[in-house]
Image 1 (cartoon, rainbow, N blue to C red):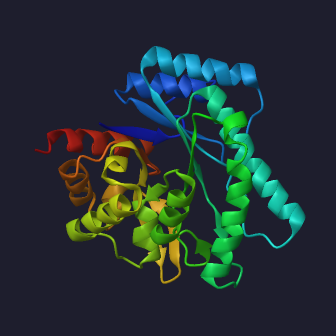
Image 2 (tube, rainbow, N blue to C red):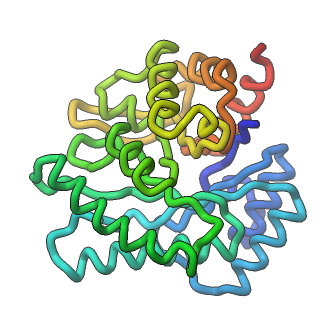
Length: 275
């Protein structure tokens, strides 16, 4: 089953806002999933995390989370690397308490390194993080995201290879892939190729528990510029949905559109009409 999630609390969430009220509002809109956006920092209030879990369970909502943007597991400076690792582990640990099933992480920047050298550094940092899994986040997936800029570590091949090594699964952001390829990954054939590659790396059953991101996106030759509403983009989103349904992809698709709930509901309703 594929669920459609808003990226953070819906824009129409009533005051005072916050994650708990956002979950309630998303459920009232007819959605059954939400991604918690910890993109600036990770809250440490465990009672609040428990309240988030209780609310989501009560309403039948599936949760994912997004770790802070300020992560570079390829950082040269030991202090920056340690801070990045801490942000990731904090997000995973709090997600465990909040009941989120997967945490999206922007893995790294190349910093002028050859991709294989950057991969080795990211792999080493990931190994350290995963050694804490049983203690801190036994039920949460570490989802390295496919990234939208050519300067960022995070091609589909890189995140799938890392995921296979550590028995995790990535966050496949199809909008980022489209931007990074300067307009590529935007046909039914291309979407099928992505899912085929995913299944080749992680097994066909893995398609049933995916963590996906999608939206319209503006881009340049260097990749992602900004997210835009679906109808203002060149995204062939109906073709994308058609392939996801055809291949029985399941899990959570998070819509990161500026037209947050509007586009999330558009995707959900369109998907429901497809044969």
